[in-house]
Length: 246
Length: 290
Image (cartoon, rainbow over all chains, first blue to last red; front, side):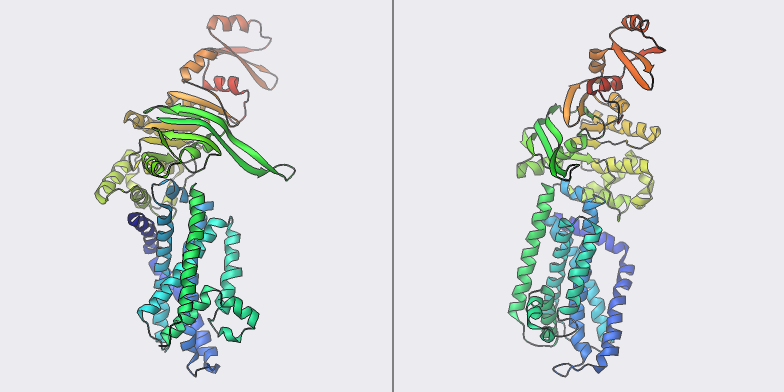
């Protein structure tokens, strides 16, 4: 099983290695824009509830948002491999365990998410942000990457067209990017919307990163929510891949 | 040995009236393929050849029926893993990993079949020489020509030394020179002891390569025999003539009988030796798709 996971991961690592420079450069653009626009520009006129600078509030949210996008989009090529190139059939025919394929893909996406997060952390420090990175902070980031990689995998298994994959970005990831405590507290939202938003994993990641990064308390309920998402989506994607294999 | 018993595959689709309907792709197929045999599945487009191969290689689940490899069932999880290790597949579509080079594609395959570092490095070099692609090992697969890609597909399927090789239309859309080279490769494989199952709609391919041929049409097995026996059974000589736009022909056991018949034909007619195409048309009664 471990060898099979490593094989699947190895393939994605080789592809990433081919494109490492382009990957790093492209990952710097969006965070730079967010930091300049919301950190320097808009951020100077925003007062946060505890009096801290807005950039300190923003960075954990940016990390959550960015790691979500990168991990999700790292796994979406599986959709093209299934529907268009059919290269997924090589894995279906091969004598590997189906869950090894999913775990390998998710781990590769986590790696991409973490590389991208490292870039944001370095840029944020350069922009004068203050937050501390602890093992728990990194663990929450890994959890977030894994959850959204699994969501990307499940979408790649269930959806039939490129257009539908794009719709996941438009109708799910984009609203989550703006509403899940990334740029402002969910307390500002009307109750009905707030309750719904607080059921989503990105909200819990944003709050956990903000709390841990600022040296605050860890909300175990949020950790539990993330773990439940991690397990549930893993099995949803896993069942879909096994069905494809059968 | 591969045993196929009463294999059936149906797909749901929407009919002309946009109502849910069932399409039978393979219907009650039973076959036995011996160890070390080159066996051909011959039929026009839509005959059910690819669906059969997909069921045999566990890419599609049969609706009903049974497939056994040396007595092992593909439906048994442990047996299925053993079977996966012993089969190699050359699919009809060029399903390479587009983001990897030629060498990396082969390495990925070798890793998936649990080959050690030294073994896979040796095997990749050996196979790339075998299919004469050793000079493109570091090129992206997108850069290869159609013929090179087909040869690479064969090399990839052979990496883990499969005992059974499935080739689904391996020479489709290739020029005769490349086709001939692929035939040579298949012959060499069989000489090395592999069982080969090849699907084709090229009659000459089946005639050239296969020890036995199963003729399929509309999902059903029409007949199984050696190409020679088919020709002998249905007649060694053909009288051919034109009736308006249509080609007409009749098969005869001897040239003498053919000569007698030609005298009765009220059109310009010719005699030639029969081939598998004549057999095919005689058995299926359809000329399209050939």
